[in-house]
Image (tube, rainbow, N blue to C red; front, side, top):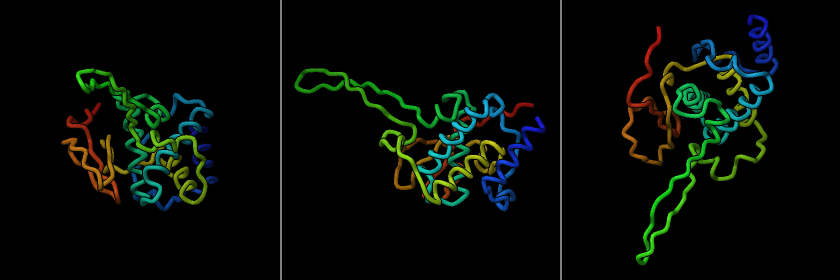
Length: 190
């Protein structure tokens, strides 16, 4: 395990992760990273990087970390898919009955957990400084285990111009996003 951690740290240095951010976040052993092979872990990093890029590409470092932590918190929660790619690409089909002129029809609507996935950006390749920063943050949070304690229980977020009316406890506002936790806080395990 120590050899793997050293290799991961070396990878972080080679990838140019800014160690100055380390004082802003705490570290802990990632709880689900060990189950991935290196190829799967790299795929998970890329899924997380895409989510950071499309959801918080223009945000501060803290905003990028917050989006990453929400994604990881969901994967660890048992309420969402168990992988980051599953969390990021999750789609739900909602079926509603619609009656028009006394004729009832079932209408199926696909809803994505992250709007950019339904907008078709999923297949686009991103380039530039924002993309490189998204990859660095994804590796820092997923592989190195960096966390901002403020977002430990954050499970949801939305842009400030949206009011979904969730009624959930607010965690913080960072840049153009508001972050929330579930109504019942995470149970501490001893």
